[in-house]
Amino acid sequence: MCGIIGAVTDEDAQKSLLDALRRMEYRGYDSAGVCLREQGRLHCRKEAGKLANLEQSLDKKPLSGHAGIGHTRWATHGGPSRENAHPHLADGVAVVHNGIIENHEILRQALTADGVAFRSETDSEVIPWLLSAALAAGGKSTGMDVAWQQTVDQLQGAYAMVALTAADDCLWFARRGSPLLLGRSKHGIYAASDALALAGLADEVLYLEEGDIGRISRSDAVIFQDGVQVQRDWQAIPLAEQAAGKDGFDHFMQKEIFEQPRVIADILSAYVKHGVGERPDIVFPAAPLLDTAPLPNRIVMVACGTSYHAALTARYWLERYLQVSVEVDVASEYRYRNPVIGPDTWLITLSQSGETADTLEALRLFKSNTPDNLALTLCNVPESSLARESDGTIALLAGTEVGVASTKAYTAQLAVLALLVLKIAYQNGVMNEADTKRHLTAMRQVVDGMHVLLSQADRLQALTPLFEDIHGALFLGRGPCFPLALEGALKLKEISYLHAEGYAAGEMKHGPIALIDAKLPVVVLAARKYHLQKVLSNLREVQARGAKVILLTDMRDEDIPDNVNAVIRLPEGDSFTTPLFAAIPLQFLAYYVARARGTDVDQPRNLAKSVTVE
Ligand code: F6R
Image (cartoon, rainbow, N blue to C red; front, side, top):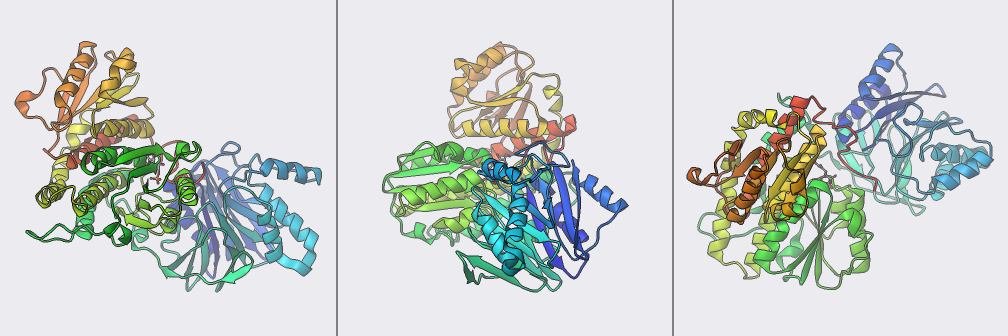
């Protein structure tokens, strides 16, 4: 989604801005722009399309200056055009904005009545016009601090924004509802929507809080909250943000698929403390409440997209092993459906980014309704808004995920959820020591099993012809593998642009069976642990209607049904680890089909890595 960078530096600001925008490309965007202050004037350049278009334009005619702002835009209000790209300008001020200004139409009408001629269709353009009006009304006596506050006070909705003026060698910022942080180095001070943007520019970062507003100069940052100046802590830039190369892989997604055994190994070594023969000891340091909390009456899990699919799989584990009632919902529905929360309920949010707007609002709704209930998050960015607003965080330890299609953060969520279930079950006496150890041993075997699956990449690549000349693809599974079917379909559709659906295999006869013919490949997830015979009878129904079948299974060779078009063998796992194994071939399948179709695997069209608007 949109990316913001602002720099006040003793170096070439254009270079700093472009470096940062490049590092935010992974977020997804469709236009880009920069504005620099040079000798008391603002110079702006914007282009639709990829950042390369802006870079080419700046190569031909560079801008210079030591203070500037830059933006990659993901279109919401108005299409991806040069006019709608940020920064937006008005009478000597320029603004970049992430989020949505909900009252923009009313503000636009009032400004138009005052004679403003808007140049774009965006909601964001009201901000520089409000700012220039506030400056004009206050004159020199009040100055930018006051005008900026007056501007911010008129906005409803979500924003992270940075403003530059022709008159000052400073930048002004404000944050509410969208992430924004500051960075500093010996060369200057920066504002950005993403810590990754600051890798290479800053040594330290400062995460702004909701409602923070202020200004940065080359050597100083001043922050106000509710009109009172506040101090916030600077911290070393997270190590994970420092490396973002492809390390010889063709795509970040491919690299991230291959990183999964390492991620699982890191999770196990960070959270499982016992040696051989000792009592199991699973510890989540940033969620200490879990060590003493009794089993709740109910658990609610809320997330979006791939993270939601991880929650759906965990529901099977939680209900089976803890015998607790579990509700799972997508955040965009949960937050608006007036959920009955009640006492003795835990909320678990799941998010790679920790900045997904709907998930964050779901957490806020839960906390405001029942402040005494425990709200946990499983999140890959421990400094994110979700992590900071939750009562406890379990870091996913997946490292920066750059590919828009989530892979390693998904399996990290599954692994952490498995450990969470084992911890609570053992701690509360609903799983005995021997069973807990047996499951932990199986979890350790995931690392090797994943390596075996990764070595089969070529076999998955060889299946891509089955996805040529088709009208869609169907993924079927039961039990904890049903959400894997949803995830397999999501991965395929988001990066290959082929229509794909995931279904509970038992639901197939209730509609989707009408789609089945020779041009609808069907991926069947058949695990020995999950209703194997029932899945196999679904498989036969699919075959009887002429579909090509790709079977993902841990069955013995002799049990594999005849005439399937391809079999991908999964290592034998238990109820926790089979989904972790099944994830990898599904990711490969999507990856290789997308490659064969020549799509932009890491930055698929229309998609954003971190969905910070609802
Ligand atoms: C799909 C994908 C998305 C995200 C979703 C939630 O590959 O990545 O569906 O899972 O946008 O994002 P997070 O996990 O950051 O809250």
